Amino acid sequence: MLLKSGKVITKLLIQTRKMHLLHDKTYINGQWISAASNKIFEVLNPADGSIISTVPDMDIEDTQKAIESAANAFETWKNTTPKERSYFLRNWYNLLIKNRDNLAKIITLESGKPLPEALGEVNYGNSFVEWFSEQARNVRGEIIQSSTTTKKILVEHYPIGVAALITPWNFPHAMITRKVSPALAVGCTCVIKPAEDTPLTALALLELAEEAGIPKGVLNIVTSGRKNAPKIGKLLCESSLVAGISFTGSTQVGKILYKQCSAGVKRLGLELGGNAPFIVYNTADVDKAVEGAVTAKFRNCGQACVAANRFLVQEGVYDSFVGKLVDRVKDLKIGCGFDSGVRIGPLINRAQFEKISNLVGDAVAKGAKVVIGGIPAPKIGELFYEPTVVVDVNKNTMLFSEEIFGPVIGIVKFKTEEESLDIANGTDRGLAAYFYSEDIKQIFRVNRNLEAGMIGVNEGLISTVEAPFGGIKESGIGREGSHRGVEEYTYIKYTCIGNLE
Ligand code: ADP
Image (cartoon, rainbow, N blue to C red):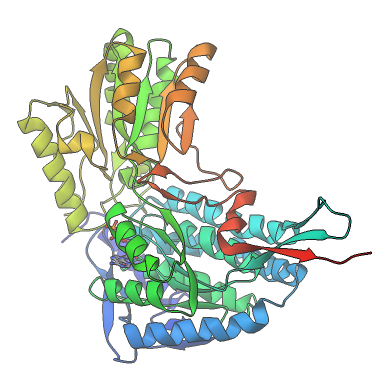
């Protein structure tokens, strides 16, 4: 496959391969090692299909080694002081900042997202390391008054133990730091299983963690191709040495992990798929809504679990919203993430590309009309798909019921607020939701009635370290980030001191 900017990528590849952050080995128990089988798999650049590097294709035996390493390290790491753990995290953060540009380049190379977005992800991902370096010293217990004078009630937080973290490819940096940082902050050790499409960013993060002096065994990483992921996941869920699993990915895999964790009643955090409604009311500022729509939909080529998925526009502003949106979408430059001004990169892999083509095909077959886009962009590369707006979408289409994960906006017209809420809530997902209105009463009313864990009101970008990230219904269990993020990795111990005189 030939990409117009192929020369830029080749030059970058050569530079990247010289970078100390680029690893072709995995990090277990403080050592950079190959798989026991010596097997490897290729990491591809989705923009042009070129091979960036290879990494170990690990299996059960390697995973067991990683678990044992984390379990051994836990015995000492759990006894470090919050101040010490804060110090390690701060050291790591400082190195992440120093290496910001190179981390962003690796993200763009292996995920395809435009470089400015990759830099945005690095800043976002780094912010979790900084935040939890601060939170480490803020995990507080309590002393509760007993109903008798001879007893004292102590409540303390303890680290759960080894945390296994399974992460997706769409935010290869942030999805790791959002889990690792709170785990380390409270005294847990980790086994990380990054996505097969984007293991290089994960390895780069671990290189910097090692440089930051985080002791051996505290962080371990198991890279594997798609074929071994289920076996590795099963072992992580069923091992008695693992105390908890934190997973970000598809609802389908999340349900498998939930089942597997039930045998050992294991702690589980799940950040699963969304199906976010994006509602524009007659009361909206349409220009703001269009800007919000572009942000909430096209970041990372639509490949985000909080991406706006179902666009519901009230009839009074429908024509104006669609017209302005299409004008805006016309300006979105599609291309290689390293080219300047590019907003839309490639889809991550062939499966994702085919899914998008099928969703649009199905919607059109059931009566939807393509206003802009609706086609691949093979001249740019095999995994590129034009930013697309489709109107008159039938609610019985896959485009409307499934999580799209691509640069496609499907719009449905509605009449009343009640109808919009019925449609918005008519899904088994409940991660994010967005709506635009300038009517304060309507804002509170709709906010109260929308079934979602996170809501953007007149705002298309809601993810931030200070806020709790997570969903309801089949979108997940638990919250990441914010001061609550540490709760996923601690258990509460209540101690009753009795017979006090
Ligand atoms: P996607 O379809 O977007 O790739 P997945 O949920 O399949 O999302 O993948 C997210 C992460 O889960 C990746 O790291 C992947 O390797 C891993 N994974 C896939 N299948 C399983 C499984 N059965 N058990 C554990 N992890 C899995």
